[in-house]
Length: 124
Image (cartoon, rainbow, N blue to C red; front, side, top):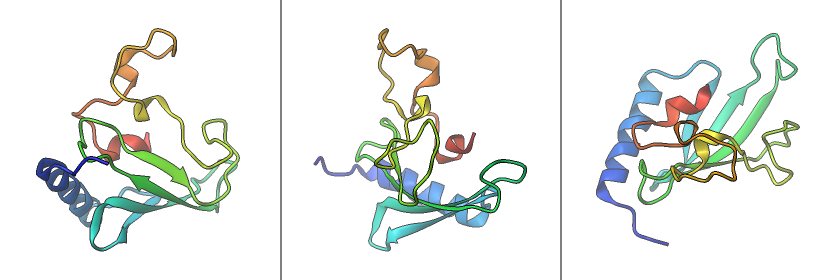
C-alpha cells in the first residue's frame, strides 16, 4: 500500500475536527484507532419516517493514501438490507467510485467522486 501523503492527513484531520465540532444530524464518527486518521467508525441512526427509523447502523470508512483525489470506501459492520449494500457490507454508490470515464457503468462523470468533495457529501 502506498504511503499516505501529508496533504491527505491534513485534509482528514480538518474534516474529522469539523465533524466533531459540527456533527451531521443522524451520524457520529470516531477513529477506529487513535493513531490512524485513515480509518473511521461511523454510527448511523435510522432517519425518522423510513423503514430504518430507530435503527443503529455501524460502518467503517477507510480513506486511501491519496485522499481526497480518490474516494473513501465504506463497509457496514451491521447487517443492512439495502439495494446499495452488498452482502459483505460494502456500500456501492456513484459518489464512491473513482473519477474515471467509464461508459459501461451508466454513471456520468459528475456523479462520481471528485477531489472537491469530502465526507459531508456522503450523507446525501
